[in-house]
Image (cartoon, rainbow, N blue to C red; front, side, top):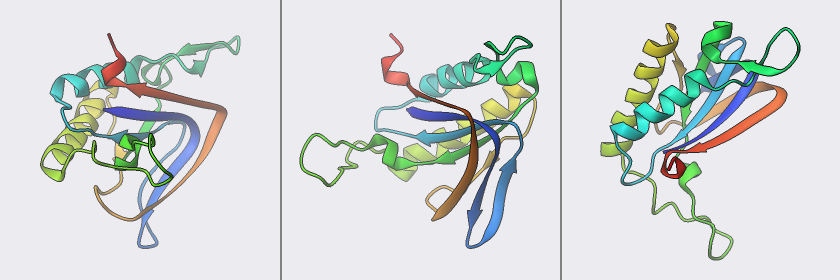
Length: 150
């Protein structure tokens, strides 16, 4: 699984012109699920997401986590994170997990992150055409790939 995590002042996702999920200060998380990903990937990524120290402390040093600041999270599925760009100019998505694998793992990530931070994680809708707006605070953007954890 691959995540793109952005520290935000606020973020929202709209579907067909209607706001589906919105947060204030916290993390905007794009979630890509690849073939071969498992619940172990979810658990590792949830722990990393919740505990990652990318929020400033009283001295302006990135030393606080999402849990520490009582922040919110918005997680949006994005299969394009699995793109292969080795050949040509058209990305290949052959590594993206199908719905039967991706949906349960995305849902599990959102549920487990909610449990870990003690707040409901706002979401998009898997497979929908979504418009995401955010104010990237910093900017701070982190990419985490569960296959690179060892």
